[in-house]
Length: 132
Image (cartoon, rainbow, N blue to C red; front, top):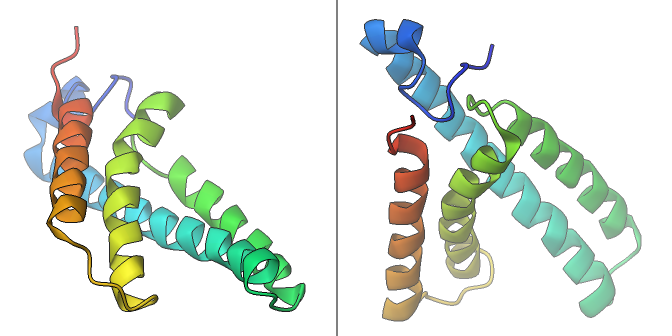
């Protein structure tokens, strides 16, 4: 299932078939989005329980969401866990700012957007950087 290289485009089978490589990239991106949503929701559930005095049932929902997060991240098509986590971090930062805006009602400011942009650029370098 996972390619043998360190990042996208390093597996010769994938580089010979651009549509297969694109499909793998799209699936991995979708799993990263799912992972971010689940991680943010899971962590917020604990925030709600411990900081907003919500019911302890929120913690149970948080555990379920965090298990979904861990599962989704294992579906990212890279050979090494650390590289998947590093690339995912950019998606997480953007997702967190979307959560801030859509759930908490706080519009991200220009520094939030600039910082998120830097994270996405960093994630792209990790994902698409040439590997030896």
